Image (cartoon, rainbow, N blue to C red; front, side, top):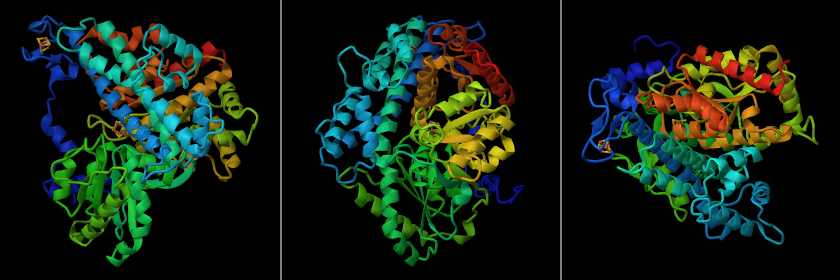
Length: 634
Ligand code: NFS
Ligand code: SF4
């Protein structure tokens, strides 16, 4: 089977070729060369006089039929990407808030409050009085106030924005008119102003894009915090990652997508159905594995192993040992249906807004969630009996991981060292230079880059330079799969002073080994956790976010959601590294604003660098600059 070693993921790509199955990499090859106009963002399909495209070399048309030039077209396209990303993330949060509302009203059949302590803390943060209220009344009110962030008419900033960032940052965003009052109207505003013949000013468009992206951030805060209330706040947990977590003798079910409303229920019903699976011949019972951010959600809260991040999702089916893939929303390749049809694998869609031709649709509503989850598991057990043993090839690769680094779990751990001021030990170690700075890795995989390569190579260099890493989304998936989230990785890759800190913290945690050098904070919406940590640090130091030696990075950026995240991260003051140029190259003006002009307005800005080692060097440079400005250069 070609040149694959130790049954690696590559073996499955070879297997696909042997079986004449196209995977994402093959489809990419067939797509080359990619459309240069699209890549530069200078094609416009906004009205039917077009499509129009601007000649980037200056020989052909320099304006569309309506007169829109490259700057207008690029800015319009970009902010529409932000709007789509924001819509995706924040509708996820809205579903969670609506579910919490039902729980509060005691009308939910499938969900309950798992973390009432967090619920009370949230109420306090939202200025909701809890005097004399029971937990359900508090839940209802928290849900109500959160849902207001999607519907507010009054011109005041969203609650989850104003209660979660530093005071100077809020003031700055308000001054710029980007501290939005309503997430959904910020999306609608983008669609409206980018309609033909409305906003033609690239700067005005970009500002609206920033406001919408801040809405993306707000929706993430809601997603993370209310999910914690319903499903529990993550605590450190040991698990495994990579395709090797798929078990030969188990009924393997992958949960894929983003919203924990589905995957939590699947995990719940599995316990009662283990016997049935064994009776069907699966001696190892039922094995749930995660893909993409839904995978991250159940990994952090339930210790469910992670099979794959975005780009290798198809490979889970190629193992021939996956009975079912259950998907909810976002980042699900439609190709899964066709690939599943070449195997015994069932593909289940579960959300009304995300159907895939060829999949079986079991819609998950509060009234029937448990019942439908059981049906899905039952059909997966049935599928097990149809497995073709000749088609099974499970890679051996898997890594041990420690995940579950919520802001709360990090703070709890630190409070063992200083119970009065838990953040102090972290701050002291940043100030004395043992930890030079912090990089938050987020975002996707992109087929334009060898999967996980940039994440891994950047991380190794940053760790060597005593920079602590936080990770979410498919970035976290990349590190988990590549053995960078365990104690051994600290010993192997962390610079001396970072290693000493992590070893000390590991001891405090009762681990007898260092903490991992990269903290897995969760799914993409859990970028809010990293912001919370940074905001707490900044508040403790009485400074604003941009002054911290903190940088965000999405080296294999791909989705519209990632564009939204990058934009708000810059809006909150962070330098944001991205490994690929977004489709803005056709407007030197827009590109200049994003990589430089933005800095004067919001302190944050984009650094575009594809080469991982070069990117790491640039980040280190920025971190040292920030340290110097803070006067902590030791
Ligand atoms: Ni984030 Fe998570 Fe992954 Fe990218 Fe998609 S799964 S929400 S968008 S590809 S990191
Ligand atoms: Fe062309 Fe203008 Fe229509 Fe876009 S909006 S397709 S640039 S005419």
